[in-house]
Image 1 (cartoon, helix red, strand yellow):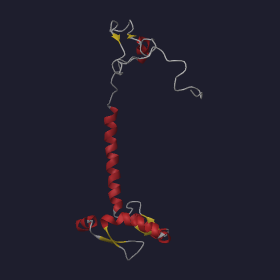
Image 2 (image 1 turned 90 degrees about the vertical axis):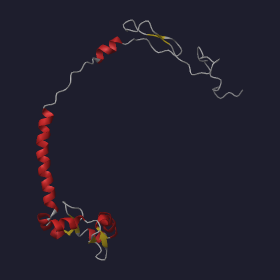
Image 3 (image 1 turned 45 degrees about the horizontal axis):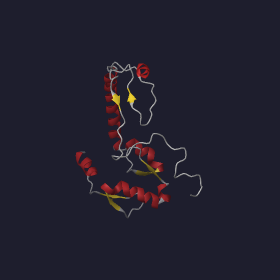
Image 4 (image 1 turned 135 degrees about the vertical axis):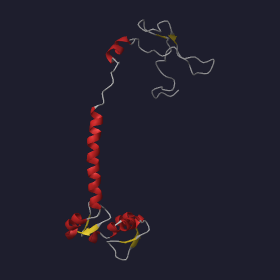
Length: 167
């Protein structure tokens, strides 16, 4: 039994293509070859069914029920399902003991404590009286080169937008 198991895992083992009997494909390339040959031989592909336990098993549609009942890979899948259901029961116990940590946040209170002073470009922003840093003045730091200043206001008509009037 162990010898056949090792033999099926050999990546250099040659397998016969179910679509073209002349194709001998290495086991490591077999899934890719099946996809390619399935597209090249749609008439044969319609007559074959894919095993639900191993996609490498292409069986005539008339024999698929017999193959499913006797497939070697079926036992591997069944063992995986059993082990997963056992693990799910253990994980459910671990999840039920978890408790949510207490939350110290109060978004409504934070909203009322914020200053309602609107942002104005170029103006100094003073912190509100409720803030612990009420004496700190936060000024805008300009990225302009020295000798340049921020305009106090924008002109009503921008010089580069002259509404189509030529100058």
